[in-house]
Length: 122
Length: 401
Image (cartoon, rainbow over all chains, first blue to last red; front, side):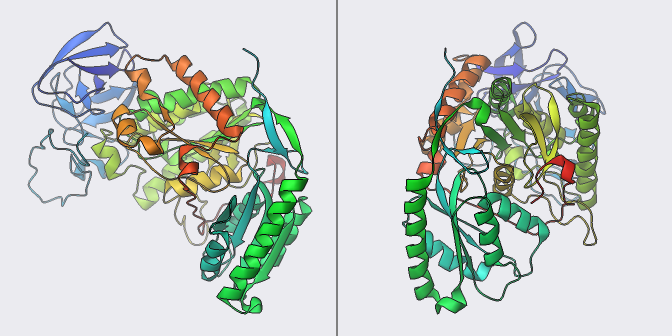
């Protein structure tokens, strides 16, 4: 089973230690181990939600707010540029979820494909 | 376990180096080809240079700090003959530090071929001299200044790569050594966390001021230090990247803030401010790449650099060996030739953070004793010196170049 790591007990996201297919992931670290089910595959080193996060609510990692949810996030969901923005960096919500490239603001906002990733296959 | 001791190179100012390099330094881009040709095929001849024809106080201070770095035994300064930066002045300042130094203008030598020939002859003479004359002396962890930089960060960097370096920094500081980290533009959002780590109220003021400038800079240029590779590697915001980057600072108190080309006035953990100060040309640019960051850490006297990369950077540096650390086991396996240390073993449960820090320490000691790091063995000697403005450090802060 793919693994994820929660740094701090108050974190509502965990970082994947393996490339994870859709299905169960073991989360270790700050809390006693728990299993979260991913609706879709997510790449290693990316984040998954451990708890529901309301739109506008804080995304917490290392025990601090690292971003703000731009839409409601369900447990097991990939947390990245498509649903989380910086409180400081105004560019962050305009970037492509996979490549980080600047998107035209008027472009249709299509849902990202979490299985696709940049760079050579691992 | 007894404290590791190895042989270093003793310089006239009492500092100890871990390498004995002949530095070939050029004073304008037009002289770079000749400088590189002079050093080609010459063992332990490293090249740095400043591309600008109009000089810049920041760049001069940086070059003078590099030319008198503890890993440097001798210097050859090569100029074209029209530029503002004077190779004769550089050679003179280097000689004042007790090192042999020579200089010439390409125009006076009669062009490229003659300059390369005379340059090679000088480099060989300087090498023979420093090999024969540099005294060796025992060296311990307390004599080390180690710089840490991260680049090509991903979601593993904050979980493994940077925390392992942070834990090693704790050990180095506890042993009486000096640790330096920089990248205040990658500490955005962490003002309270940073100032809480200050050793003294004065250090807290310095850290707060460095943070405020970094945030003002990022707002002014509308550019935060997070790049496409970071996003692809799972980092979503600058706040998240910052928390990971700050982990390489370990847990010991921060003694204060130093600027580029400034030596820490005493051992312990130091934060380096590399962000330009506002002046009549605006902020200008902060470090445009990791190579500039590595040069800045070397300019503070770091004999060894730790470079943490999740995605897999291959860059190195002249003068000081770069030890390449990744927290991403996939990256380690894919780029084994370039990687010195796999901190990803902490994430797989193979090692504890303390075990990894101890293993990293013994690697640092081996490299300090002369074992080439991976980037060093591969010949990576990238360098980057740019126009920048930083207010001259006040004298009471230490070295004013």
